[in-house]
Length: 255
Length: 248
Image (tube, rainbow over all chains, first blue to last red; front, side, top):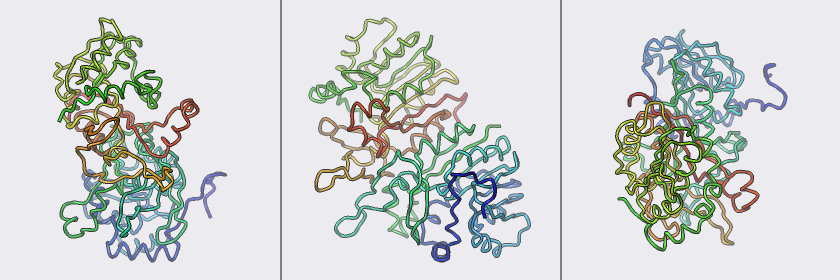
């Protein structure tokens, strides 16, 4: 099923979002906005975006296409939205008939974008599923026009290093977040809705230094925390001040 | 708060026995990584913020620096630094790092090794360093990693048998004072997030050129087996940045 570009020994891109149980759980999470994405990650990512008017945008790991529709509302000229999951894309296609949004089924690893075709490449919480981050970064750099931007979020390395969740106290409340194996990068088998969700842990050094080595200029590094309003309406978010759940990076291909 | 813990006799005595205090740079676990970030020193004017015993000042001169200014708040540290060299091109000045006041374009390289986590206002230091550096020049710094400074305890979480189970993180987003007990009671440090270290440099007019979370060198892992735990959590954050022409 994978394209011929898959070389021997290279991990086959995972497609957990087409797993029936995973998809059902994930869809319910997004619809109810009970997750952290809506409270923390999405607003933080949007704050890092440049003006979208007239821009040609690539979205790596578009999911239900929320960002693609948002970008078009903000005046984007076109959005190329890719995802490995057929179910996610079917849902995305059902939600819009906008001819300026193109949904394409591909893994991030296998997608080879045209050179200098985009003003902005966005990726929300997808790159921690990708084994070969350096190749993805080089491709994004090549796909951007000079002066173009790459804005993305991933699960924070503090969270992916040892993904076992909070250590609880005797009364079952979070006591602290356990970090271990931090410098040992690579595959982590986690449970999220279902067993066997594969993520890749990378250090902050790798996330940042790989961008710089590829030629990017770092413009911002974000570790978002809940806003005062969010904390007031959802006190459970207080634990999000205790360790960073997300890492955001905004980088520019120099003009 | 500008704490001068290094002039506390007990603290000073204890610090003086650390491998890095006796054996110098080669005994510091992060030195191989820090050295790799340093630019060519030949004929450069160098400023070292929090110079301590002056190891980095002397290294810069060995590498051909034209002149070095070492700044430290501790008179005891500076006294030892002065005893260790009679090089007239190294000048030691007693000052808190926050209080430096050098003219524009005074230096070609600014370095700071494991000192800025003692400083309350990283933003002020960045602005002052930007001011006294020449254009396109480097600021290279190391600090205790935010994963390490988040909790004041700065220690592992232990099992009932005393084994190191993992490194606990808490209060990460709560920046500011940490009253730690590193070699003495009430050593004041300041926790900042990685985001603050990086974004403050960028907002002060620097371009980030490297970010490192070094592990001990393979040789040191063999020499000191206890160092293997250093791979379980990051202890140091190293940043190299270059002054861009104008602050944003």
